[in-house]
Amino acid sequence: MKIFDGLFSLARYQADRIRLLAWHTQTYVGLGGRALRGMVTRPFYGRDMIVQLDAIGVGSLGIVFLTGLFTGMVLALQSAVEMERFGATIYIGRLVGASTVRELGPVLTALMVSGRAGSGIAAELGAMRVTEQIDALQTMGVDPVRKLVVPRFVACLIALPLLTIITDIVAILGGLLISVVKLDLTFDLYMRSVYQTLAQTGFVFRYIPIDFVMGMVKPFFFGAIIALTACHFGMRTQGGTEGVGRAATGSVVAASILILATDYFLTQILIALLIE
Image 1 (cartoon, helix red, strand yellow):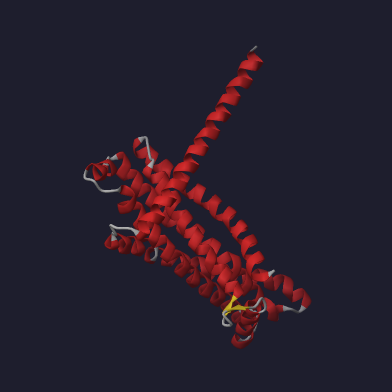
Image 2: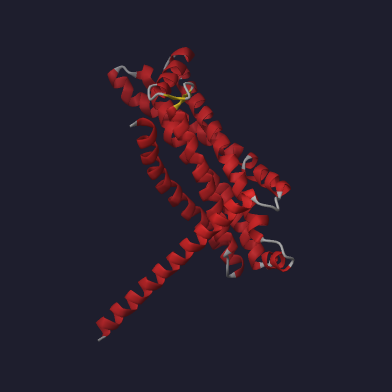
């Protein structure tokens, strides 16, 4: 009987976990729908959006710059170790350019912004929840989603693509630095190699490389994931100050997993649409 009781308790526990996951998924999707609707309907909180754009975008420039720089330098160093064996160091620009623009730039930027800005959003909204500031907004007739979520959502949608471009440029320049200083490649040879690898998959509208388009589509989805995940955890914070810490941690973990999973599926879709 004890075995059956244990199995029954385990099954009930798993069922509760599944119901909780389904509830979180429902509220997460609902929050996304309300945020999208709030982007195109009044009232608009433009000043709040500018403040969040400064906090999320401008505030993340430093970490994004360092991430791109050292990523490009490491890529050049690591690829040089293998390419020197075959006398193919002249193609280092191809590896750095393709890896950065297609994958590393968007993903690393999103992960860094999630860790820096996403945790801050979750902690800020969580503190507002436990101190009943969000309840006060509702009492005054203000929609918390429009006031708190939509400005952060729009700011992430704008900031992530711009930060990704900065990461790509800095990473390519970091690879250039290592190629010129340590590998004795010329500026012209390296940059021509980067351009060739971006041009080999073709162009959109005759001038925009397909690889660049693929790399720029992803940040919009990643920005939405960061904002919605952080706001979802922050708006549902419970348990006082400890709950605020749990909300910030859970936001970063969930957003990071969703970013990596979404990156895979987006890559599959974009390859099928633009390359095959």
